[in-house]
Image (cartoon, rainbow, N blue to C red; front, side):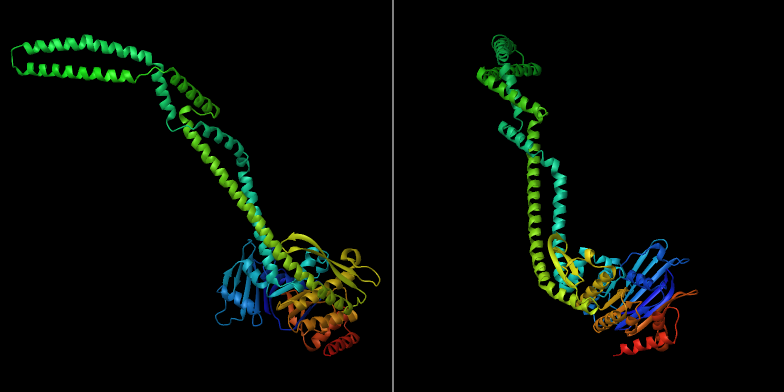
Length: 549
């Protein structure tokens, strides 16, 4: 439960330290005294954003500290313990602190350890619920109607699992959409690449084939010229060079002298004869390899022309065509892998949607099962607060969102003999306020929240109805701490504790704990307005005395 609230330099509050007790605490005061400001301050430790105009004029910062007693909240204790943030001296103690500066900087602490808004918001959602005075207008919103019904009917773990499955589905859809957008233009080229690959594969081009073909083509086109050159060369060697070298060699052999340089000349001439013979033989072998084959020349020409045509079509040089084929094949394979990835992502979307729908259908069954009990309790409460002829039911429709596959709408008739219709078509302002309060009371009875705060939820009611509401709140406070801002003296008289809010020129807003005659005076003021007299005091004492029964 909420044990204390400390507020400094927040709007009209200079410095306040408020102690809260179990049971039903009522907060009263003149209109505009600042009761709702306390709830605005409390909202900061619940994770709300700080507005610059909420920092008191003339101050550089504001501070709000809420101290919670977790002795009746084992789940919250465990949550803090798992984060390593438990108070070493008292594990039942939880202190949440928020500060903000005029420079726009905001900080948060949990048990003296710096933390972020998400952490304190997550923790405080399980500790305290705040319902404002304008929630009857929110009740016209169908999303709010579903949320209130789920607070009554649904295990939070089941709803959280549906929300997790929905988010997983949406994330997979986003991933598929992003990847599709990224690959969309490229995948549109896949058909062209497949055609190009088919055409290039049919070419069956080998590495360095074009260079080899050009070399062979050159040989074949020059074959006759080459043969003529070879014949002339052989003839020159056979008929001119070899005989001449042989004659010179014989002449040198005939010189009768063993001088060294002459012997070297003889050896060189002999070697030359041998080399000329080898050259003649090599020429002969080469000549035999040169074949004049017109059919082969034509085949070479056709192959070369085909390679030229394909290369020109693909806007590359013939020498680069082989590398181009490799690049096209690689790119096509990459696109096929991307297409496979998109298919996988698409399958994941369908699988996660199916999971979401399965969990949502189970959630829907739970809602349908609890709807009758919820309507019965709302009708019972409406009857108690002066709407005895009301009819109330829930109309379910289908949708898909983070809360499952259900949309619902509250239907009501406040007059006997009339069919139930949507709230905005039937209920007046006063009736709508009572309906909102009735639903809130029904939901709160099911709530496991340790603390429930109501900001003028009883607005628009009075007399016996206000007394009934007050007693309902006091009954609710037997299991939950209930803090209620009220203008109804009947409700104020039923509080286990009474806080009075007023304005002070020196300290801004002050809060006093009222007992005894001070409480009688305040309730008398609520009964008779500014004029507190014996008559209003007598009525106030009667209300307080009646509250004991």
